[in-house]
Length: 321
Image: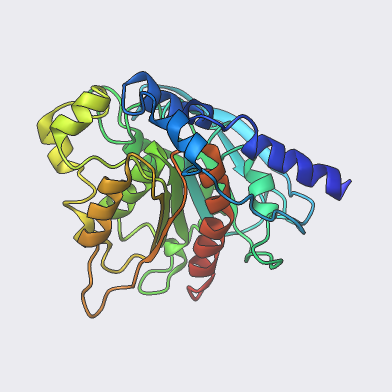
């Protein structure tokens, strides 16, 4: 049973990834908008996209999982969400919380590269299970997790989703205040568009987000560049300036950051700019940066999910309660 499940995990994450379009919504966007015209196939042929399959075993039987919907005032529509629990935990458990933000064209059911939230929490890194935490996914649309007229997915996260989870004991809803309070038990991660969204959320709310992990974040370094690739990513040049993850990277001075990017990812220059902009102040927390062989495709995403989750679990568990 365990061996069969491991094959299924690998099959979900790694099947059909010879070309960039097989990366799901993120890859489809890049191909359809001309960012990866023939480059994905060339990279696949010359090995630039080759990524070693992650060792997803041994792992524990997945915990329970619950899905639902709520009407989002911030997004002006009904959105779906899924909460996954770690092995041995069920609804009602008090746990740190991680928000997992999906990529372009995705939704709460496809936020992780081929895994459900409960399956992702059952993975182990180097055979070691991470400290227990809950993982929630939610529908964020295609607006790059930044505010647009009539649709504010970021406010949905902070004003609606996190309170919903805290009413369930996740993220440690508490009346305690001050350093080390239970109110600081929320992490965020994402892939591609979701990776950018995770960084943006941490920059805008460093008092709320305890740690952030971005896998292949979709980062542009100018509004013109963003417009050429995806005209709907930002409502205006002013909005790009307000939500430019590179320009506002200094806000992450005291937020633990992990960033992973493939060397052949078309977003890699933007990620490099972000890394150069990350604060290096004496009181800052050194970022964990992983630049490795890979493209903007599912193999790289899948390989980076376990270490990203382990990074967040470690930092969320390090806070005193």
